Length: 198
Length: 362
Image (cartoon, rainbow over the protein chains, first blue to last red):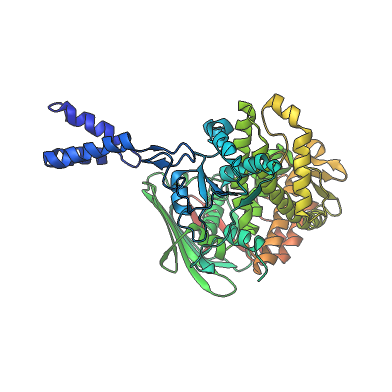
């Protein structure tokens, strides 16, 4: 099919490597790009190059950033003694929307998962330990509430507690604005276990 | 719960078959291979949307047919339901309750059924994993959270085993394993505590006074009468600590619900090593009838009871004892290759199954 134009086949193959894109979609996208004006197509290529050139990782918190240190780490208005530990950058972005939290973040770059060959040395834990020497009073562990996230939380808590730093774990329970009748029984049970005095 | 009408199309050896069962006992008799068990399978499918003997949907479709459809009427304490289960060879499966599409899990919420068959003996005579599988399947019907915990537990277990194999510290996953595992152990303790009593009662009645005991032996040491989740979690962690060096050597987790055992003993001797075929059959029947009784209490209605060739391998006394138990049950369906015992056919409705059709159904 692409025998007349090997470059289209090459583009389609590259696109098919992206997450959520199958072979059919990749072919459709490749033909769409072919139909684009030269200007639009180059703009797409340039923005891909720009992302790779400009965006790096913050050397302090491991967040993606165009500057080093990142916007959050270099903000003097934020509380410097509270660090919220998350698995991925997207988790930090979600946690940053939390009202009443204006501390710093630390991105682990994943969670413990021996099945995928990920052990403690593959996570950015050393960087976190170095940061703690600068007068941190509380570490909030906000890894995901699944088996791997919980095990990572257990590992971190054990590592940090002997240092005399307050270690907390975000609560598990019901999403705000939802209806009880639609909640699954596992969530309801955890919410019941974690109930608080009114 | 009562099934008042059943129609099976393209199902197993039946091109089209209809059945109008009685509210009490229904007996299917006929030669080997005539389709008696298939009919039980259709009834179980109508109630819970799956085969009672683990057959896939593709296997249940009649050879030349592109689909099967099993439909019928089920009466529960509060209302009458029209249920239909259909499957097409291309993989589409449809459940309808009162002509509205429904999820398979909705059937579990509305109906309940217990099947007893020759394959159950393996629960008593087979390996410990057969007993754990029995526990897991039935406990999940009593507590939805049990199934959630089981899934999470398996995940934590494979992560911990992988950590042991790679020489990583397995303890973070050990903590999670103990937390979830303790909930599973407690669920099993509470379930078996209740089940043990009625299992021995049924066994005593069927075998005319012989005794069957069942005892849960978790790999984490704890008492049968404990309800203390925190204590079980602590014991679990202690035990993990004790076997740490051995686990590092064998690179696998040696403690937890995945290593639990249920010990059955007949007249104070271990059933697995000392029991006869007939004793295993009787014990398995008693166990399933006890599940039936627990389900009836919990759901506040008698489940449908399916009994597949249960008289085989039993002596006359046991057959008599078993039939006496039938008075306690609601609607039941029973298959037999031989002439049904007179005491049974007197009170029930009999159907002769032969040449892929049902006689006596009108």
